[in-house]
Amino acid sequence: MDNIVIISLFAVLTLSIVLPATARADCEGTPGPADFSLYKNRPATFTSKMDAGTMQKYKIEWFIGGKSMGSVIKKAGEPFILKEATLTSQSFSITGFYHSGDEWLLSRHKIFPNSEGGMQVRFDDGACDNSFVTSPDLTVTIKIN
Image (cartoon, rainbow, N blue to C red; front, side):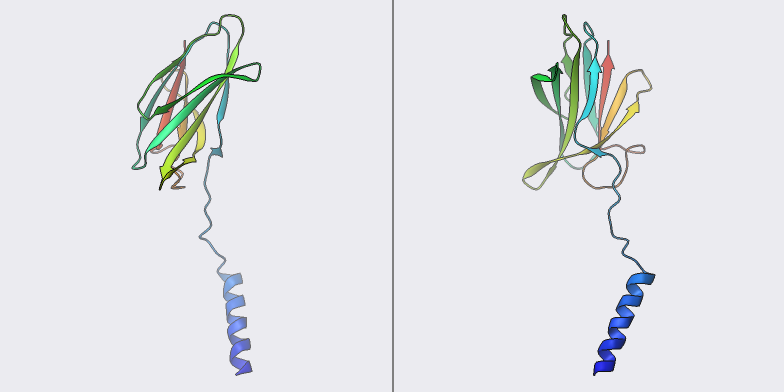
């Protein structure tokens, strides 16, 4: 009986070394908000589109000197215009969320240049399929005027 236990233990240890666990998720992207700066007298227009089976939304928060001046939450497909600050420059952040069960969870993001000028922040839907380039789940396009 002791020999069977020792042989079984040896077999498990050998297999764990030869065949290491590969079920570990290797998600790309950065969790949390994407931060940007905006010069004074420059408005920014945000448009978005969704390509996922999961509900998604995004939050835009704007700051002057590190102090939050406001925020808005938009569903995928809803545009938003951040008006220019006339006295000083401002910064803003974009945070993506996806719906899972009964709660909204933080999305990972990557930033890309937009072919029409501006930039895109692409968010995932928590599937960890690393589809930022081929089919991003939520894309927010920022056009600075």
